[in-house]
Length: 328
Ligand code: NAD
Image (cartoon, rainbow, N blue to C red):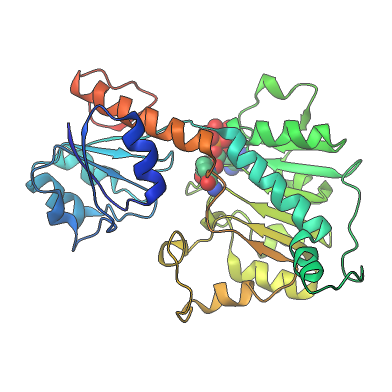
């Protein structure tokens, strides 16, 4: 298939080219209403979480003859799916690549926040070997609350259980694989009992701003909160208030509600216009990474393999249900 790959970084190109049996044209620009005409003459576009796939863009894609939108990610909350259905556009995605990549990054945030590794790194480079301000706590014996026991939540729970933590989980769906690793509890119990809370549920209307002033007030004072899932699970101004009061003692974020204008590009030397994000980055007990939890060699290879297989399967009329988001 002739595919316009939007929003391409050097690493995307490396892994997609290595696995490709299709005619890929790499375009550095994000897909949006200005760049959509670049898709003219292509049967498919390949996009990422921070491309714009709203109705005006989708209409242009359809007019230019695009039939398939192949997402090289799992999430699709940036796509107007009803508009795709109306316009006859098929959307596919990579439902699963490496749950370990994301779970291990969440663990990295927990370890770094607890033991202040980023601060220690800077100190040692300045020949400052003092320990004040670097005091941590044993993870062993602490209660870790996992919100969502899907593929990533389960991988995270297994690792934290290995540290000797008591792992509790809230999820409307009980997964048998958690037996012996974690105990299912209600959301209210999870907020009240956890020393560390890690979010691994999808962004849905029901989970939008799941972490808000009310749920934060139910948590243990000084709780550690980690979000590697989707930014809008958290009401950021409420979290900032809780960081100022000490109710939240540590915050690790790989995602941010308004990350679309920030993440994945080198903005060094520019002025951050988002005052909420700028405030977040001033706290010494806040660690933000720019949506990199998925970013391992294994995950990129698998994303490329499944994306290209989706193109082949679509051509053969055999797109698997797990990959198909809309269309036939
Ligand atoms: P999954 O579909 O396997 O699991 C999600 C789980 O959340 C399901 O078990 C579901 O029942 C549960 N859930 C739904 N609503 C819930 C609620 N209100 N409370 C508790 N649990 C609830 O998904 P996954 O592969 O484990 O991915 C989890 C999330 O991780 C994705 O939705 C995505 O947003 C995020 N993600 C982030 C990155 C990254 O790079 N930071 C990469 C991949 C995925």
